[in-house]
Image 1 (tube, one colour):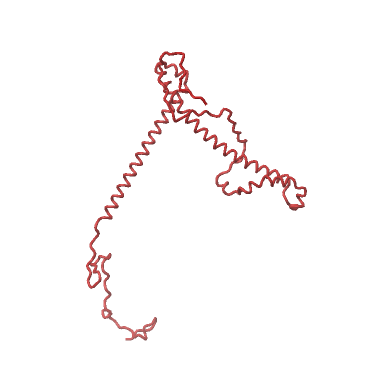
Image 2 (tube, helix red, strand yellow):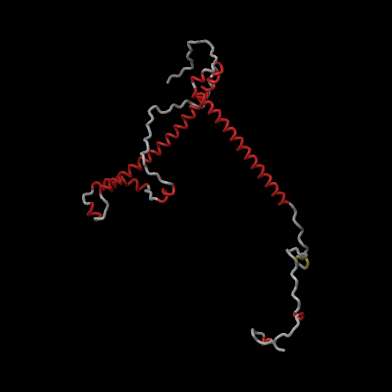
Length: 255
C-alpha cells in the first residue's frame, strides 16, 4: 500500500469565509451498512405474553432444542405410528408440524436476538459518528447563517436538529449539576453523622461505683427505680392463726 504526504491543491485559492471544521482524530467516520436487510413486520394478532405467564410456562433446555431436528425427521419417517404409540397418540402430522415448527421458531428467535444486538451496535456507532460530523456542519452552518439568514428556510430540519442538540446538552448539564449537588449533600450528611458518632464514642462515661468488700456498692436508684420496700414482719398481722393441720381450704379457724 502506497502512502503519500502530499495534499491535493484546490483549484480555487481564494480564502474562505467559513470557519475550519473541528477535527476529531479519535472518531473515524462510520458509514452505515449500504444493503441493510429489513426487519419483518410482526403479524397482526400475534400472541403476547406477560412476564408472569412466561415464568409459569415450560421451556426447552439446550439438549432438547438440539434434538428437535432429528426428532422431527424420525416422526416423519415412521410408518407404524399408531402401532408404536397406541391408538390415543396425537396425530402424526400434527406432531411433525409442532416439532419442526417449534425448532424453526427457536432458530429464528436466536437469529433475531443476534440481529437485534447487531443493529444496536450499528446504531450506537453510526449515531456517534454522525453526531460529530453534524456538529462540524452545524458550526459552519451557524457562521453562514449569521451572514445569510435565508439559509434557515433552505435547511429547516438542520435548524431543528441543532436546536434539539443544544436543548439536550443543557438538560444533560443541569442533570449533572443536580447529581453532583445531591452527592455533595449526602457526603456532608454522612460526614456530620460520623463526626457526631465519633464524639459520642470518645466521651468519658460515669465513674464506676466504689468497691466494698470486693463488691460494687450502687447508690439507691442507680439500677433504675426506687428500692423495693421490704415486707413487714409476720408479727405485724393481728388475728388468730390456724394451726398447721387446719390450714386447708374450707377448714374452720381455731378460736
